[in-house]
Amino acid sequence: MKLFYGEIEGNQVLINDEEQQHIVKVLRMKEGEGIHVTDGKGNLASGTLLIEGKKANMRVSEIKNDLPGFSPKLHIAIAPTKNIDRIEFFVEKAVEMGISEITLLQTEKTERKNVNIDKLRKQAVSASKQSLRFHFPVINDLVKIQDFLKNTDPSNTFVAHCHENLERTDLKQIPALESLTFLIGPEGDFSEKEISSLSEKNIRAVSLGQQRLRTETAGIFVAAWNYFQLS
Image (cartoon, rainbow, N blue to C red; front, side, top):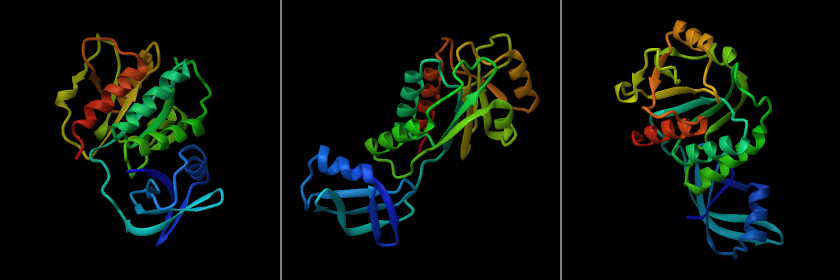
């Protein structure tokens, strides 16, 4: 399947401008080739390619609406790493494994204060197409942990930290839920003050195993764990 991104309104399909350039100039696809377009909202259009100069369009043969999404839904709130390449790697792999939402978290020990969110969103779209996803994940702006917690439901929210002296639950003991939120700390982990604050809000701590994982590795680990539960 050659999957591209665009808008789907009723029976009308408009391929994204950048996608059109990619089709015509990079892939050099020919008119009449099979093509599929998703809007990332669970809709999929199938048909054949139409080339008009430098523009790419499609002759629609079928549109499927409201295709099922992933369950359980996974939201990871993760502190951006000092080396932005590592968080970009996390985004790509987590998207491939079906993550529903990513929030970048500013904590006491977060060194990186600025992130190119638009670039991460483009990477999420690219990874979604590569893995044939018809529901694209939400990539939220950088937010302070205190503000993030204001809208957090403690019944399905967990924090992964490395403080061995504090109680932590094994991932295997987490019950089956329709949606999950995990908080992943920065290099140097969450501060004890932050962990105490999370505990006061009844957010349970989990262990990701005996090894100490890097921030992006911890995020990918949780995404992979959830991937095996997807239906």
